[in-house]
Length: 176
Image (tube, rainbow, N blue to C red):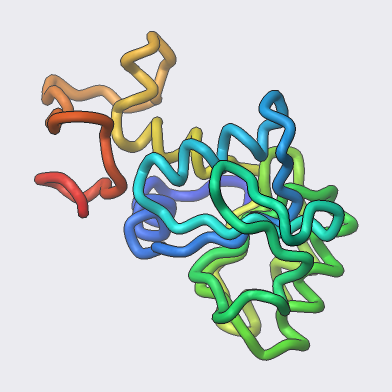
């Protein structure tokens, strides 16, 4: 896999397939990127499980915080890593050693570990590095364009609006 660029179809398929997200490095500080990404993903209908050993047992946005991925009742569909590139390598090693494999490992903006990505892909896990699911969701749904941001997509077709806040699902005709 070329991790220097991802096709829109690859990202879109991941965001449509995933339902549960474990966010490693989640923060209760409402000005931290992990906080507003967690809030956004919850609003889109994803089940997000914050993981932060320093906040274990507390809540972030009504979600119980877990000390580690091993404390989750089941493996998530996606692990979203809000840690540095070196830490991401150890997280991937721990995931593979546990045998509780997610479908996707997503490393946030500025987080890239090619060796960890190869290990994950060799174990059958899809990998995204140096991207944000919040930004990618907004870009692919056309929602980011509502704020005047260039989504790199030209279309005369207006997004289909539903009542209330937009919900998870990038497939034509809506989502769930």
